Every structure is written in C-alpha cells, then in structure tokens.
Amino acid sequence: MYVHGRSFCTESAFCRTYHNYARSLAARAGALVVSVEYRLAPEHTVPMAYDDAWEALQWVASLSDPWLSYLADPGRTFLAGDSAGGNIVYNTAVRAATGVALATTSTLRVLSSCNHTFGETIGCPAPRKSGTASPCLLLRSSTGSGRSLRQ
Image 1 (tube, rainbow, N blue to C red):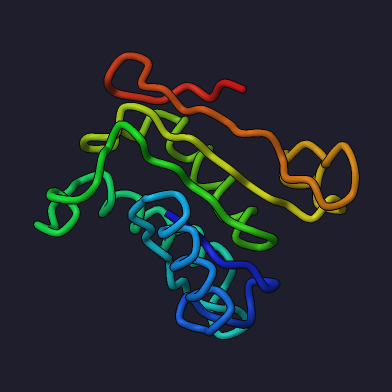
Image 2: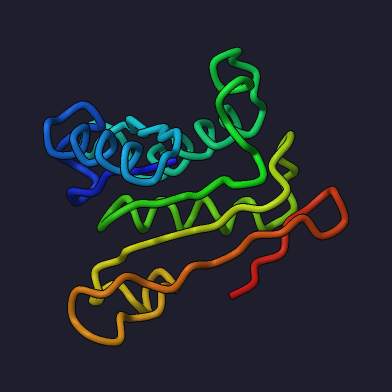
C-alpha cells in the first residue's frame, strides 16, 4: 500500500508522478500496489487523511475484493509513503500496533520516508544522511488481537 506525499494538500494518487511511480514499483518488485487517494487539506482536516489510509489498509487486509484475494499475499504486506505520505503511513502503522486487529495480515512492513525536519515531531528517525529513507519497521501479530511495533 503506497501513500503519496505533497504536504497533505496537493497531488493525488492519480497524478502522473505518483501513478507512474506506483506502476514502476509494481513492475520492478513484482508486487501488487494499492495507491491510496486521501482527502486533502485545507478542505479536510489532516486526521481525515489518516482515517482514509486506515480504511485502505483494512480493505487490503480483508481481502474482500476478489481481485485482492486472488493476487495479494497478506503475509507480504508493505506500507510505504513519501513526505506527507510517510507521515500518514507511520501513523497508520502506529494505529495498527495499538491493538486494532486486521483481518488477515500477520505482518506489516513499513517503509516511511519522512522529511528529516519532521523526525522528532512524528517519531520517524532522522535519516543518517540526506536523501536516505527511514528504516523499515515491522508490525507483527502479538496475541491475535493486537500488534506490536518492532524495529
């Protein structure tokens, strides 16, 4: 699942840049990529973007769509995003780790590329050097009813 960036207020999963990136990622990784369209500020408050990503993750994990149930591997689920999308992905991962059960996903891998100036604010470690992504976070099923966040 990929969440686009651009300051919570511009662009779209359908814009040429992010659509081409999702297509390229799918082709190079041999993966199914679900690109999330979230509601933008200022028309919508930022928490709505988090809710949209959460809803998308629940849809992916449920495998309720025949297309997903046929093509997706719930054991290899990644959350990825850049800039504002990295922030949204991080918050979605934390939400999953707080004990809200997801239907079929036993492990989530989170690749959150955050602007280094947001490091302390949102909890993403600052990159070691300019242009590097934050480390991968693994979310594993703990007791079946919740998730634990491990680095």
